[in-house]
Length: 79
Image (tube, rainbow, N blue to C red; front, top):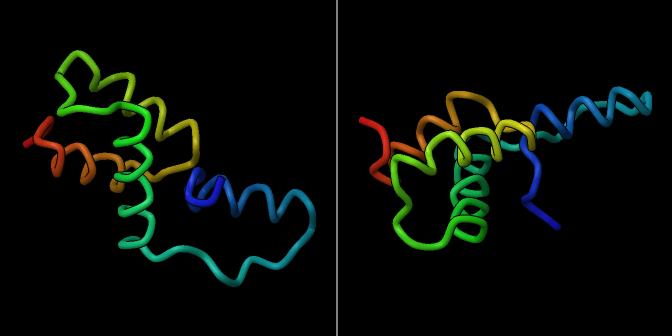
């Protein structure tokens, strides 16, 4: 399950457990993981109809809006 969750989710879970938050993903790492996750969950090129589902899928896993937007731009679904 490595690479399933974004920084926001990980940080929230660590803080809830009272653990220190030191090592977080860089934006490039988070972007790469989000892209891989979308490829796995939504194989193929994707369509504009899938846009909402893809955005929600990543947001529910704690990915930042900027990362979600960039992944969708790379997939050619946003400009």
